[in-house]
Image 1: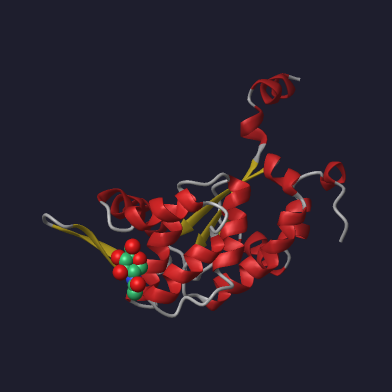
Image 2: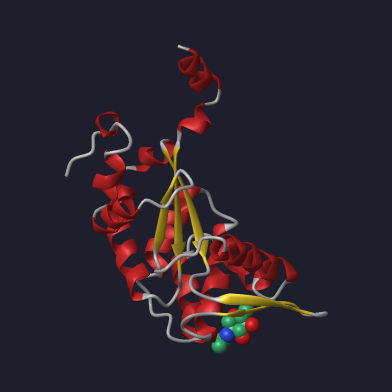
Length: 200
Ligand SMILES: *[C@@H]1O[C@H](CO)[C@@H](O)[C@H](O)[C@H]1NC(C)=O
């Protein structure tokens, strides 16, 4: 009874939290977002699931005096740039827009900085301000701070692969594996999808 009252007062704590650690040049990240596209057909899911996307991956960072943080990324500098773009965009969007953006950009070519810039433009095309702000963000201290934040959270995970998926703050290998295979179905094992009228 008490927990029912609590959940009425604090509905946000009832949301299932899913943390997803990603990397801009990683083929498995591309595959995951291809599969997560189906979630866009059920926007109501976003009321029950809180996604937290962390774009850093298997890298490291060091603090350089008077310069801020410098990053090393698994797939080189272009990946660091793509991660930074993701960090800057995610900061500006609500969850549904984040999902729309990520499923878009991770299907686009990201082989070099120029292509990443073009893909960014395409994936935020209805949001001129987001594009402009992102270009400023990637050159700013704030962008550097966002990437540092993503690095810190990622490095605390001891993760062995990317994507790496946590549920309610915990890494459960079985959940990680199932989510990657079928995100929608796996979410529906956590929340009552009948209210969302999900059809498989
Ligand atoms: C991509 O955009 C950034 C931010 O405006 C800019 O500094 C950089 O020169 C662009 N890269 C290329 C290759 O066009």
